[in-house]
Picture 1: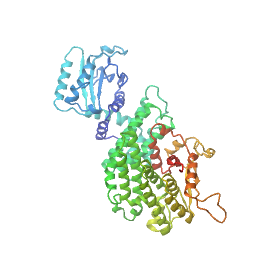
Picture 2: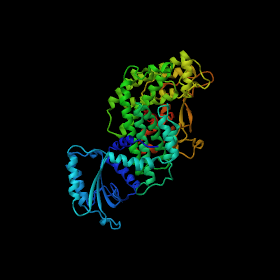
Picture 3: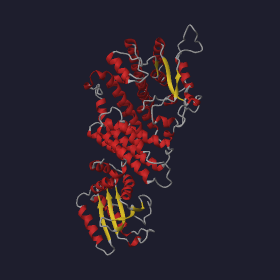
Picture 4: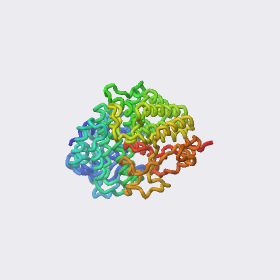
Length: 584
């Protein structure tokens, strides 16, 4: 495999922070057989050095030299008149690098010829090019055996392609085969190619992990740089297909696998690992922002998420697509809030309400797992204390559930099988594997009626459940702090989060929710549970599942939402129960 130079160039240009260039450039020098004596930030604040990287290497003329590399990235990646002469600009950096002495124990260090190189992942603009070249000529005319050079985006593209990305990052033949197959079939999977999952696993298992005391080993730096590059290539290729949904799916998978690896290796507090993960995570957030800049204008049109080209499938596809948009939009809002500046909460609520109103299938769940986006929508209303919108949404969903049961004798499939739903709705055939005698979705709605104090909506749902004898239950992991079922945990090698971030999570039990008064219940009569008693019952259950999440402690609580969404694991009841308040 040869990574195309255009991809390498775009990747290098995407390094918008100087720290990103600082992190990857030493890897290039090592691949060029340079011996690095100092790296970026090692001497930050020590004016006597005034150099980003000091290294020993063989120059293009075959002579061993000492190199002083001055790295310019971020806002200074393009050399202009302004940043050349400005305070702490390129001119000052060159003067400091030229005349401030670097002390090294390297044998005969001071006797080696000196080469000072400006490195920037951009271009040089305007008349400053001739100014810089004249400076190089004047400074090189002395007798101290000193020369200058400039490595711009074109030079870096060639060097990174030839000496780092192609020969090192995917050198394994099996990884190369997987990667080529991924790119060829990138637009042919509705989900994520198993080859991509295998490739990420392979990259993150290059060797045995050992926490670093001072800095990561070159092996792990290359592994994490590979993850960064793969995320960028997937994004670039998705844009070629004009389909950022591909990037959304694949980068979601990549983020989950990366964080899973971190949790398994207990590296969530390792600052070196976290610095790489943060870069990949912020890139994912930026891609999601670009995705919703395309999707939201469509979603805000009347029935905008509907596709006329999908034929009969669209009876199902429209709903599935709408709930997917809701899932990821509300996830993005939480992620953007955590990683970037505070969002305009009232604007987000307005957009959400408008999407719900313009796409009425948002209140027509077809699968039990649609409880997840529904819960996220209602939690957004909790955040804004928007009882009116919550009441309207719960009523609309309840109406559609009743209509489906009374007209077609169906509820959302508790087996969460899209194929079962298509077979039923499109072909009017109910599979034996279609399960709707039990519901996880309805208990979620009921518990939100308690949160919003919606007694009327509770009574309507309660009576519906009792009329059709629907079994209700919420999924609860065995791993809670107060759990009495920990002995039943099947996967004892991995904790709750390590499972949650790697697969659909099943290591728990169904907690039954009964809507009759258990004390008055007898063999002849079920007494419906009044709203006040129901609410108290749910309040008493708050401690049923409580858990200290390692992910939340790192400030990445929104990643748990991504894991639930991606692997279709129902939200655990702690997602909303903490918002319950005792009845007045």
